[in-house]
Length: 265
Image 1: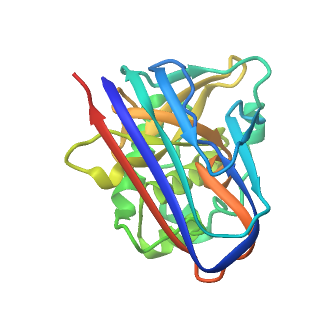
Image 2: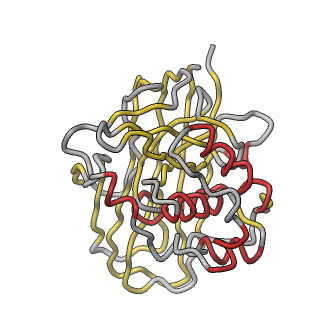
């Protein structure tokens, strides 16, 4: 596929923000399954770039002048093809590090009991896809009931959530089964489901010594393919978030995010 993507994030405040730091992971890498033809990020002031521990391109900018609105826009074109296997650089974060639970993935006893018969015995694609189907069946896709701070245990208790929650529940269960797993943020092209344009899924490690990972989309209970565009990886949503920041001031925040994806001929 040849995809054109535009991702616009706008913040508005009732009272001025006096100081803020924004951290962006909004640059897709050229990797197996995707080639970045062009990509540009527009920010209110110039950002500095660095590579984080997970080899994501991280852009940071600091605003010291007060403001009541801010716009961040990423836009570009990407060529994609079916791919679900990725091999780490030798300097990558150890898969063993990704056996650790986080505040967002820590499972409850009820959750572990519910999925006990579905927990994978081996780190194979078939076993992980069976677990993905179980998670998809248990957590109904319902937008608006959860937010970025909702934990896997909370989503499970509600039996509802979105792709981010599916990913957190899946991470929780993989790690409970001693299978390294990491969060993937990205985009998903589906003309009939534009609400899925901003998407999340997981990588699980199928070969720890070789650093081999396979990508599974829990919301669709399938391996990733040409519809998926990777942005960043991390321990959970927070460490791979496309946009996050801290501020002083700025009462009454209103956030609007708009993502459009179109297939070019």
